[in-house]
Image (cartoon, rainbow, N blue to C red; front, side, top):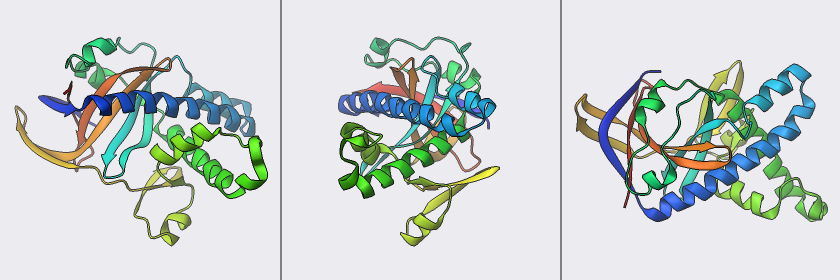
Length: 235
């Protein structure tokens, strides 16, 4: 996947930045809680690999889409500890963009583990919803965590049947194991840049490290699957 950086700003309202800051940390906390449970069912080697993708000290690039129903989280990638330092949050909030050169040079991974965890979390969420009257206070997720999952997570499964039977459009991701996720429509954007005309779906990356919010990294994903990174500015 090629990555291009253009000198164009994407404006975010202050309330959107505040919401993404809070939501991204809650999502990451739920990921880590789920990973600790899931690893009990894997072989020691597989469990160690899974846990390595959700360690708090890692840097994460969460992928978000702004929809008519609000912000939706569709997955994340992790970065190696050797990644360059991110600009402080204060810089972001004074309209200074994240360092795109860092975003381009940093190797990303963990997409498959992220989707597997999403499928596991969504399955738990549906089961807790179904059996809540019988579980009482014994459910795995707290009421607040259930609200976060309901508000921001996208239905994700290891089978297409629930999505197909519900008439929900979905995308298929193959990583040896096939994962099915609701296809969340992202806004289409077209603009001219120093690289020519750019066209694609607008995505918002959120950088999280050590369970701390580190800033936004907006990008376009074009038809070829390439990422075109832009600058984040706060209104």
